[in-house]
Length: 137
Image 1 (cartoon, rainbow, N blue to C red):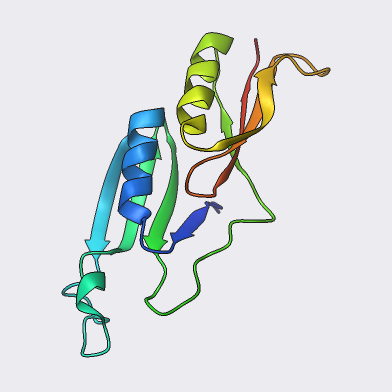
Image 2 (cartoon, helix red, strand yellow):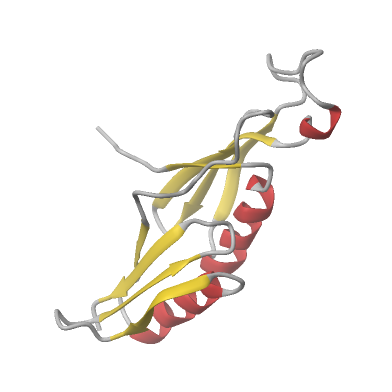
């Protein structure tokens, strides 16, 4: 069994995935668009045809999936969860990932040593996705 995160965006999925690719490394795989899918019908707005119906983001052996929500649905509210990014090794590498995710977002807990050891910080990125970033050193 495997449990993975699936993020929904209100039309900015491709932009968000590119942001994660630049911020974290990794690659976007299996990207499918609404155009040419069974959802590509008379009700699909022309501006939605190139939106992401499904994609996978893979990085260092981990992955999550993402898509743009169906047109006409309210924009997704990212709440009640956080993406957790653990960076083994140096705190400097984890800090670099934290800072990259923070670009245009809001830091809710600065990246620093917490009472339990290592380094830890929390940020909500510019797409509204909350992240917890940690390292062991």
